Length: 324
Image 1 (cartoon, helix red, strand yellow):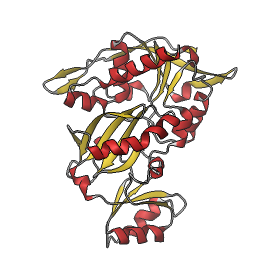
Image 2 (cartoon, helix red, strand yellow):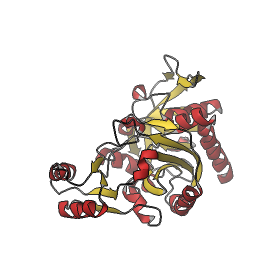
Image 3 (spheres, rainbow, N blue to C red):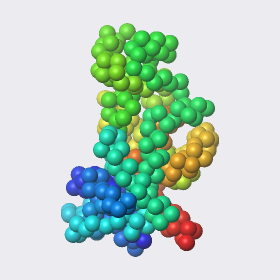
Image 4 (spheres, rainbow, N blue to C red):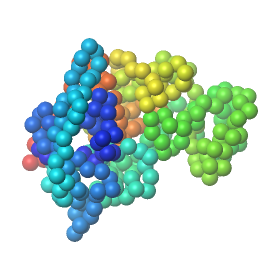
């Protein structure tokens, strides 16, 4: 197969952590061609999606004394080539948020790929429909008490009723801009004003879950089915458990309650074409549904001695075979 990955500049990726690299490496190990591009290099020509792509060769990372080690250099790029994306068997949209205007325009270009010929992961329409904070709100039996608003008074009423709350910007990634609201904080007005841009931008406010101290579980779903999980723990100096915020990781298992949460999502994820997804669960509650560039594969493979990237690529192989 020929696989294209729309990623951030490859020189900025960490091969020992980045899930995009894990997926590309898995594809190479299984004998497939890998091509990479970036969102600004996408075009529509004669009603078809095109891109300036570079063929990629990777040096697979190695596990040494319990940690991943990468070669230097760890990749080699070919000559930039203009190709119609329908020449690919699958296209991965793996650009990191924020989902800004440029990001949205890239998904509009990907709409011009005929998905009967080329699988797009994740479906561009599904990405647009699935704000990673808001999307979870439709699963009312799975989420903690939550409001979305730009109204300072409503946020204050919610926080006072719950005792403590978590404020989340709707468009950020990796825990960026998430704030802890607690009773009696004299900075409350300033926090809300800054986060809502003076009451013009809605934010999500969720009841604080004390179980967050025990970790924030990332569960990877493939075609709506959970395949692995990872527990993320705060560094101690930060209430956030995100790896990008300095959190550590630990091995974990998926609980019966978490399987139940996943089952609530399955049909909707499939309907929206959201094939590779990472959900976040705290204390038995769904808090986010990550569809843009969910991560965690490298850490799970290291802890569980698995090969999740190869499982994803093999799923694509079987899906393509079934379509022929």
